[in-house]
Length: 147
Image (cartoon, rainbow, N blue to C red):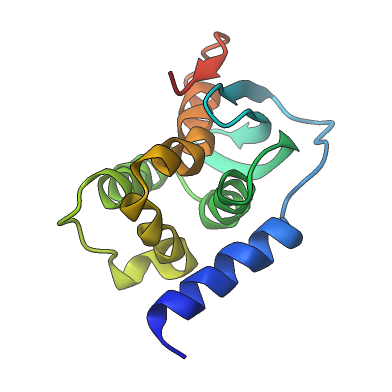
């Protein structure tokens, strides 16, 4: 199996069986995101304890890339500090938007999203959850839009 097949399998698995999907009743931060181009809608709720994301979950409806990206993101940031999440955000953003940006091994399963940059119109699908997370962390109540 080559790397592209492995990445595709990760995306398909996280779309069909999204992790951390559903309500989070004790959330103390939330944000809503929308990608008008694809129709993706996302609500992200999280429990911020000091500067650590203790828990987070998402709800909504989106394309396979949007759902898989949100699922992968929630797994990657849970239990991490704001500084760690900000560094991860920039690494993933670079990987999605720069053709020459590597997918560092430290990204683990998130590297599966690197193939999205071959389809520029889908980058917004993959990045919606990350921008929504950023809004939730900064307690920005304006809805996030990828337009």
